[in-house]
Length: 629
Image (cartoon, rainbow, N blue to C red; front, side, top):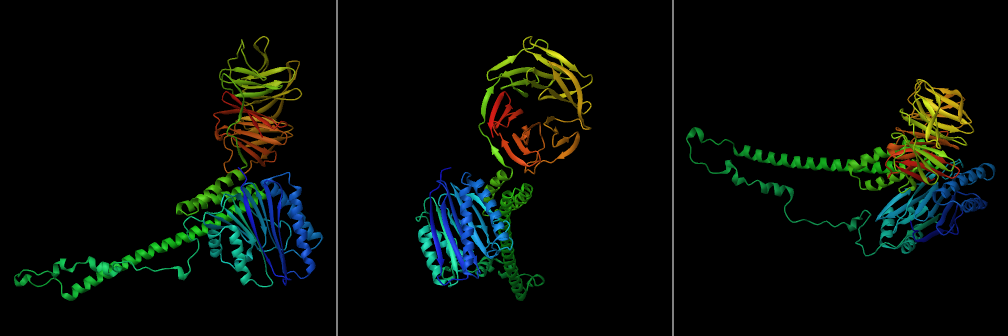
């Protein structure tokens, strides 16, 4: 996205007689697209020499950001923040300690249309957007431990006409939140800075220091829009208008037209036994009075119930907003320190609170829905590829993919048809196609391509256009065929649960061994390097020196439940899940590295990873896709 033009206004107020605190503010353009702003303050200082600590801390922050300028955005902010915390920890342990527990600081990095914030101690940050002020970083109490000084962390997108305020939190000792919002709405950021400064100067004390940045993004807010107050009106602004008509009691009395009631009408003269009135005048008066009282009581009770319900609902909405803001912060904090399991756990709580907020129709529901989508992608490290490169397109769809030199051999199981791609496409026609199903193929360097049908392994003789049977295992049901340098072929016997290893020499299979034996035979695929990985629908079993070990999957918002293919290369394990159109990349310790989502594909059947070139080739129906990662 294009870089937003920003205007930065500064409020720096400190009295010459102030001796108990010191304040430093600086702005540093790192490059054309990134800008660093820092406010730092020490309170309750005892010696004038303590101010040197604050200057040293600010110099450290500035130097670390410049040293990491080869990074950008979130990567720059996370790397710099981690290094700053480590440096301050060493400074607090080995050198001076007078600043510990007295530091309040906020770091703001603007990178194009994104902003990254981290604070320590009594600082705050607010966002003015669409006539509303939203707190995005809360003040926190100073701690006595220098480790992870900057732990209060958040980030997000900024838009045109946003105003970001970063400040020492004591600014609200002199100007109310409502007046601040009104001032930002009715003035541009430059005028607002002047007005806020006057208010603070009129009420501040000699011993105080205040530092504030107002960052105005894009064009200023339009002053022609109808002014809508975002603050609670003071008593002088409230006007009470008497509406025409009667009060509630008058309306009710008006409804009761007494002349229409039967006992107020003149009756014809009746015989004595029937001429006695049904109700006395006192009873009639009591009945009317009771009816009015009952109606009024019912109306008041209903009104009270409705108002009480609205109050409870509003309180719950406010509580939910606070919970959601806290959960956003906790997720950002967990991601900053690479604690993905904790991030996923908090994200699940966030979803429950968001669902309740949606049921209550809270005013900020859409905002938190947008935040939910951003959090989901960040937690799950999702990289969506909408238009992958098509390396080749074949006549038929393909199920199997094996590397062959600089190209590939591909096969369709149903028709038992092989294709060759290097980089031209050719189709292999065989005279003696076996009757049993095709279950795997592998290319052996310097020998040729092997294929497994049922219980037999064949060598494809391209010159004679036929399959040459090399090894038959009676009663076996072989699954897959994979090659490992220099001369080993592997296939899994689902009948016995054995992973078989074959030695290839001079175009023949000279030896058969059992690599591992598993009691569970319903595997879907396997892979290996120095260890062996057996893939099941919802788990992986890792064999080290022939012994089975658990291989934990990373915590994901959408768990791996329909895996189909596995590949091991370098330090990573790759799993293909066609149902969710994704390729999951994790370390060999089960830590999530990346998720590649291919939403516009139709049927993902196999893949190959070239880690040195950072390229993944994926079969999608009759297309060979190429993805750079």
